[in-house]
Image (cartoon, rainbow, N blue to C red; front, side, top):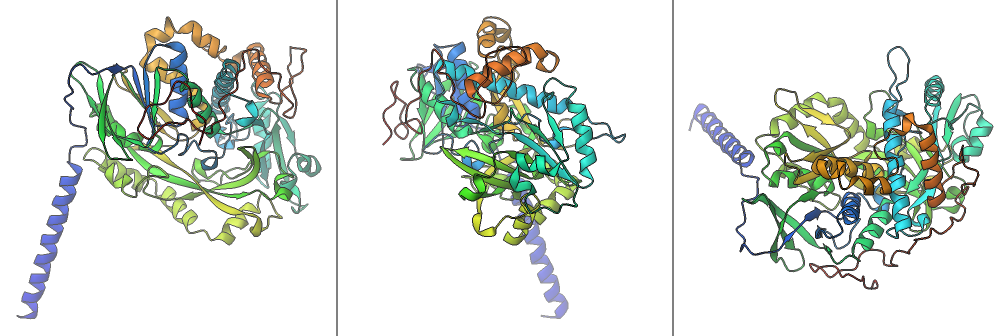
Length: 580
């Protein structure tokens, strides 16, 4: 065989292989992703709501519905053997009660130097709704001792160098709003050192620094909230929980109901549940499950997974010297998830300090997911938008590469910007949960990468989902209120309205424009939850610095169990058993 013929043969083989690969890719992208309809017997029972996922979103929605419609039958499915083990887990997030106090990425700076506080106000109002919801649940007995899930921790914004001027202007803009009128500003190193000793000790005295402080800030254990709410739901005979049970299909029935197919991961048995409504609160897996439904709107979505790693310590010398959440300002051009912060955490009765996040990358959509998740979510409808977003966000790709390649010494160097005397031996790495950012492509619009959350609802409101990440859990009661308004507009305006006002006294009103109501709400929630707040109108003092909170009249402690106790694949009991 001549050299020319040999080259032709090689080129022919390569060409054939390329064609085979192309055909395989096309077959994969054009594969059916919607669940095939399941033919059921016809006389099977119908539940009112299926909640997919045992995280804080499903727990919150289930709690709302149990109060609004006590007779509704609600079924919850969780893939893991316990609830609250993905992003809601206390070790898988920073536990911030996001209120816009210290998060400088919520206050955009215009070209003329003016500071917009609109987004910070929106986030702050949403967290006030969260506190009202949790206050109601404490009084109602659904949540136990507030110290098990929320603790007073000042929120501090901290900057140095050229950013001092920005923080000063930010403070001047924010104190004009009643939501932030108690914010304190300082450029004095001694005073800032009293607020956050770790931040100033060992810092160069010649470096200009500044900080703002809000004492009403919080640290929240969202895993504890999730567990306690689901424990309480388990007391209702109309609520059932199945753990170690994976949702494998969601299909629409001819009568407008839905069939949810599930697999018991213990014995691989398959079963089906017919339901009038479905909520997908499955975290990063929500996009893949949305594709199962076959709804036309689902083809507009794709996901981009980003993880977060934190440095964490429980060294008493460190944790006892720091009681604050201190947020810095992200570097110019860095994505929102890159905002560095050094935080006090209270998890299961123990105090920690964490620093981060450092971005990590994995193809998984869940921490306990599969490396095939990203590929499996690609379809003929979203493959090109995913590629386009990647090309349009090369800075993000570059940022992720730089973060993933950081050595332990480089991570410590970042920590020492906020804690100059940090010792590497005190810190361990803790991998947080996966955050799947939304990629959305609407007709006649370019594909966009969205750093936030979005509520998806079908046109008839019978199927809904929560997509995206930040601010996430801290605004879960507000997001589930929005979901109720989207899915049940008539009920929210009608028969549910009085109950919603009982749960959320400020419902339907803008606290940013109603300082009297804001003060009343903050006084009530702070008194019940043990937060730090000085009422402007009421003489009864609010407990300061986490002092003991008077027991509410209707308080009933939550069960001692750390999670709802159910048999794998079996329904929860009306009276929860003691944990094994």
